[in-house]
Length: 470
Image (cartoon, rainbow, N blue to C red):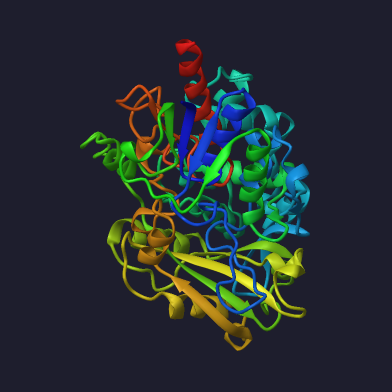
């Protein structure tokens, strides 16, 4: 009998498996698709030689993850590549605000009226970032806080809505960039703890940047898999699990799946019926005949580029997708251009370009034209560079990754108490009604992102149970 079976070979499932295998437990992973990866994959979606990331692309939380940093993933081929600027946010006048590794450079891009306010916001937390990140990403009580005072100060700043935090800024440049940071998790700007979300992304950039993985996000999944196999773990692909009886006998079962799928497979009935999924996204992967022709020079040097004219436009786009049930006319977009540091992702002189906008859950329309009209506002002539495009709406994204219910790439709404207490209001979010069944997906704390911390935290709950059994 195996000690643990993990269902789902995404970053969290693989991290959970690695953590258990490192402690001497026998582990096997079962993945429905024919390759590992989950939200960290790389494929030729458009033309031969163009390597696209269908899901995640830039990894500020990955390089800052306490779980990943404790693993020898570089020995297994993972190499982080850093663009000159982690992120840029262009404006229609041809200028841009930036999120640079340097706090001073970032603050200067906001203008003199907000430079000091930004420095006062982030500089108290930066010296203690590693401890703060571990405490923040280990909540709830999987580990006692190492620096409860700093964590409490962070909570006082971050738990109110981001709109409150934005009152620190007088001009639109800083407000707009910060609104875009919050929108990475598709949360309404007025939501609970949204200030913390924006602040975490900013601190992550200053601490270690927003890199891409050389060759694509698949490198993260492949490194975790190779390390797991060296530890004696087994990985089975093309193996769909419909019920617990489909799996071999084990002392524990760990699911990197949505709560909905887990309830169906394990027979939990309506246990997770109150879990809410968020808006979906419409994703376009582009093969380009050269770099994106950004008007703002800073955007040409950035790995990630946020698209939204101002904070009001971003807020409207989020409300349209999450509350109004309609696609925004001017969608807020997150884009990534890996070619600024990884030219091998496309044939010589060409580029891959990654972009998505928010849409209502399960939306069936086509956002391509609206997205490209937005891009043309900040990069005139963009459409002339397009060689091919691969589009994916909520249905296609959910078909590729069953955790993306309704196209929700966060595997659950980041709103209300569910921002931090997910998938249920519980101090033990990784356990389930069955004592041998656990959940480790992004539906559990600390939530969305390729960081493996949900798997790491869940593994702690699993090995405590296995040790108790003897």
